[in-house]
Amino acid sequence: MAVARVLVSDAKVILADEPTGNLDEDTVAEIISILKECAHEMKKCVVIVTHSNENAKQADVILRLKEGQLFQI
Image (cartoon, rainbow, N blue to C red):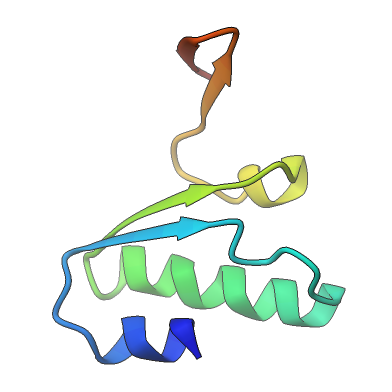
């Protein structure tokens, strides 16, 4: 439901905290695809917080927080 609200919103920035937690693989792929479309085709800034390295690999830019320090990967 939250993803649907984002798609109809005029927001220029989307903040998603673990948007794929507890979802099956097919749904995860669909959600990641929708968020990438928001970024690339709808020109929105999408910030995702995730513990999944597989989801992070889909990002254009990856930042990692380790011991209070923020690093770009």
